[in-house]
Image 1 (cartoon, helix red, strand yellow):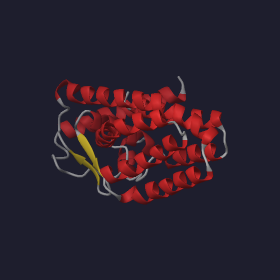
Image 2 (cartoon, rainbow, N blue to C red):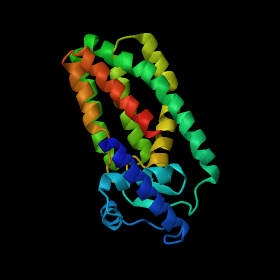
Image 3 (cartoon, rainbow, N blue to C red):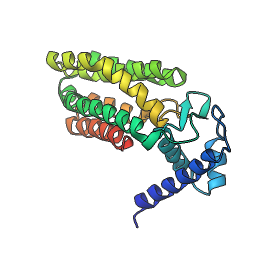
Length: 227
């Protein structure tokens, strides 16, 4: 059995146990769950496994992460057959696919065409994104979008820029939904900060292969989170 499979099985088991405790009424609707460290000790697993289990239950509509506050009980039973969450995930996944079609190529072109001013703009956007770690989900998503906009702008392709800007309202709405659905921020604040910084540095170095690879890995990761 691979390590990845073992981790997945542990997360499934942890989610099953937490779901059982929720259904049994251990935590009422509106109640804040114990922290990841406490739950990890109770369940006998690592914090990363607890985090994944919480994401699963958030995807079933049972939990919701509130930035800076913790994870709270939304329902003590999964959303009926999970269809609401399934449909929401499918809609967000479609947006991620379109993002990939635009942003991966934009990253490659930016590595070839970016000017010093473009790189400076990307680094400023990274700083704003980091500063938004404790902001609301919408403010954080807007700051994150600004980083991706700076990359697309650095591609110096007006059609790509136009496509990106047309998509921005739907992307922003989908990313806010995804954060709530999967509890992506929680205590992490600004997730994927290292990936974003690595992308900007690859572009600054003119490394088109690395920029393409990092952009694809980031968006593939989002798709994988949606299951």
